[in-house]
Length: 407
Image (tube, rainbow, N blue to C red):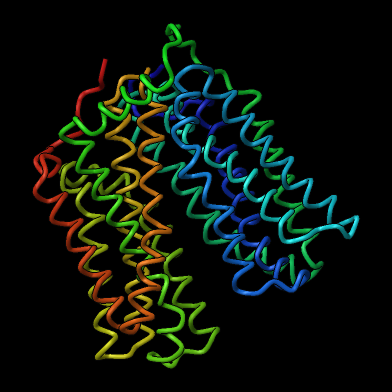
């Protein structure tokens, strides 16, 4: 392992695999509801079930995936997970060819593919510290997040174009091919050997990981902040489209432009993250994401009195840029303070914070339905304020530099 900030060829293979995997995920996630509506006549309830099936594995299987990543080869976990996603995509293709695809089958295969996504997402950050030196962690995490943002920005647009052109088959073909490419790239990656750990009681190992996170003075406030952020952001997203149509008087295409600003912000944040981390104290870099999220939510609230597509777009740009810097900096922090033997479980516990997303969306729909979208935007802003208070009053803010690597 190198001790400077260079990224070795082994990490380059991981980075290319990650780009292919993230692209496959975004194309598949975007194509599924389009095919459900256009080819299968799905309504709101059916697409809601499909969305649930594609997100539920993040809550159900993150912890088991983290346990597996700590017990065995993380490279093999990722390769197996991506192969599972490729098989699910190929199964959708086969059903389309046989004219046998139904909403329940599409949901079931989406669930299976998402299980692969969860395992890959848990194992990848746990693998990074064994491939690059401590000083290169931030740069490596930035590279992985840049791939995710590019896939996030381009995947849905590509999926839409392919579904509009062929009715879905070509979109799922592209996603399956990218998943298989990700598996091939992982096949040539040499993972450094780790010390063998005697297998223990699974529940005890999970508790060990949870105790480490929730007893750690830096990781605990980061988890709480992330949980509240996810809930607040998805509460805002739950009402944005009808709010933009009715209150901002935007057309469907204009709404698409404002939403695309989120992806632009993500790419800008990912590109700037490494330079920001070199120029600003580490604690302030970590707090940048939550503070930017609060500012973005206040800009959205301001559109209640100043209806403006420009304000809404600026809100989404900030919502994308700041939190990406948060993701990169907090991933680096977790990798530095967590022992190698615990990284899989700690990464998995971090992903369980995504469980706040459906809860936030449901809360947003409830408040928006009872009191209007404006009340929901105000509620989301309160959530963003809470997460800023949590992180700003924690020991994280006092960090002048990245913590020393754990033994």
